[in-house]
Length: 99
Length: 345
Image (cartoon, rainbow over all chains, first blue to last red):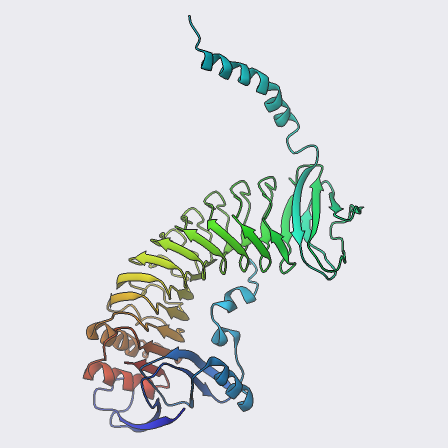
């Protein structure tokens, strides 16, 4: 799925960051419901289904299905933490022992 | 004095039953309390009971018999029945650890296992109603998730030592009983069932670290989790909650928060300004007006000032969530510049 790059300008509103910084961000091209995968280096930061527009400075992959994202992740050699793949299923996958 | 016929019958029945009741008291659990299981497991089979005191005795559908605690059987295909018996009424059994052994049919009552601390019967094919564990007072670890249990979840209020409770991915319905008496509860999951009505308060569970109630039909307002200051994981997505999302400002240890696919219509200012390690915050598919969308983004910007704040994915898309105002977009830009991923309508 095609992505777009948006030019973002920080204004003097910035209190945490330096004002007047201009940076490029990745964004989904349209508002259609799709799976979005954000990664940095070999780590997947987020994998979620959403409509609306997603903005990030990190690499963004956009696909119709979750499987397409996983295929892409495998092709890129990304690490897929169970927490990212399915946060709910990860609840029971790891046996938490009472201290 | 006249005695009615009904009263006379009642008295006679009581007199006849008295010796039975006496014997039940004297020989309680003896002889041979028995639990019956059925399984379709074809490979080597070793359900595990941990116990002190008397041996457990295993009787198999093929007529074999053993005193071993963990017999390995290989019956091949088909449904097999076996019985576990105990001469001391299972009073020494502390653990039942048999996940993924293809158990089918109903789970026998463990009410006779009054020393049971740890129950792990998850990832089987148990069906029917979950029997009561109210007699298992020491129970602190309970997993019946990933089965086919249905009906109403029995109360675990007597299990005041409960620390982990997982019943997710079953077909439980009706209201969720209160776990307020389980003040040691740290891990709770009931996601992917058919619970309905109000979510009971977990305010007394101040040790709560993770809770998921997603994928049910809970409705009404969400109770406050402000007392659950150790909370790291919160997921109430995919229900029918409405009204104002209560404040999570006191839950500073949150790493994951999701309330997606509900009908929340407002947030409390400052709710999401205090979490240093929150990496996922999903508000998608709700009914948040522009002021609420802006407030979430503003809170997140405030949290950037926390030393060591991890980057986060914030989603405010879908449903009837409003598009942020210019000020909200400006806050979103700050977050994106800081390495966050931000989604909105």
